[in-house]
Amino acid sequence: MSNDLKIIVIGGGVGGLCLAQGLKKGGIAVEVYERDGAPASRLAGYRITVSPTGAAALRACLPAEIYQQFLAESGRPARSVTFLDHRLKTLLAFSLPDVDRASPKAERPIARAALRRVLLTGLDDIVHFGKRLVVCEETPDGRDVARFEDGTSASGDLVVGADGANSPTRASLLPGAQRDDLGIVAFGGKIPLTAAARAALPPPILHGPTMILGPRGRFMFASALAYDDAASDREEYAMWGVSAPCAQLPLPRDPGRLDERALRAAAKAIVTDFDPSLRAMIEAADPASLSAFPIRAAAAVKPWPTRRVTLLGDALHNMPPYRGVGANVALWDAALLTETLASVAAGSAPLLAALGDYERRVIANGVAAVRRSVAATRRFHSESAFGYALAKTMFRALGIAAPLRQAALGRR
Image (tube, rainbow, N blue to C red; front, side):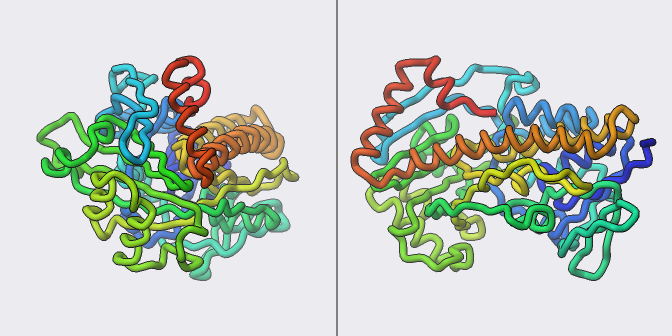
């Protein structure tokens, strides 16, 4: 096949935009169709940590100047990772190596909205907003057509579903694919990092990701996004998330529809017996930042008969957030698919055969990542007193055995 390949990407999130950048960089025609009405429609997200694996994918897909923009937008690297109990007693704490931000080994915290802005750079003529997919259909000549809610359509040699956990593309390709409800509900918010907030926060939160284990399966995560440049006008904040078994909280089926007052009250109910400084974080949260969502995970799928529709990221292997790897796995998928399609465009491999290999690899990698994330979710939300005591004992043991800690906590 000559390099007249045309790719249709459904979804302008982290994975879809990384793929688009990689294809454009490689001279492959690509169009992105995003359901949001405008680039800034979804600015409510918090920080993510781009791991060395995710950074390698970005470095492979982005033009050099845009990759440098990503580095410039990244925050101060974490100095430590800490596990506490709900009374702020340390269960496990370890320092992270002091590495240069440009090093391939560096983990880079970045605001999700900032990463999206970086990934949109140079794609003005490629990304089309306000396009909500209805269905993908195969045409008699072997191409695939994506049909949108506004009556328009787009066709290409391949449609890539990068449209998130509730992917309409997945529904067209794999109508039997399911997501499992894990019976956990989570709430999140963020507070500006003012001088007063810095003084009030438990110190580990300012130094890096901090996990707080509470009784009865209640859990809290907190971390800060700050910059080395003191003169920067970029937003600095601490983010938090709290979660608990759904059965403990009288909530509607869709907690995301709660108003600000109800969201804050439900989040506070999870941490009633946590240290006052942790409860104060919820009270101080910016009302516009509050969110809620049930915790679900993609059920494992087996390789399917390859056709000119495929998936990446959350559209294929949506996972709980408790290992912080979802975005990095999506970036890995995007880099692998970029490499795969480059080989097709160069005539080194037929499209369907190359896609079949890509799908087998992303399924295997994604299933493993989901399994580990679900295991962490269960560990953090054990409702029994024995389970809570066992989890605390495990983290204390990890603090003693460094090799065991690396194996248990290692992230991609």
